[in-house]
Image (tube, rainbow, N blue to C red):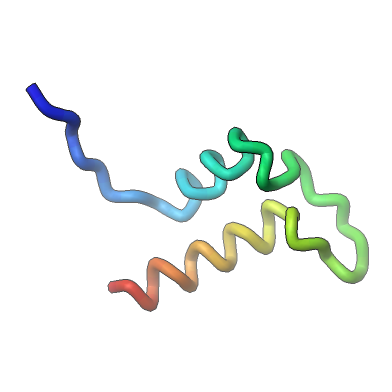
Length: 53
């Protein structure tokens, strides 16, 4: 039995990046948001999947 292929959602991508330590767990809400912000990462993931489709 092989692995089941599941469609990736943007939240799955962000969760994986948080687990790897690439993103913070919470948004610090600083005015110039940093690159490790999970909120911005989620938006980027949405855009990336939208362009891929």
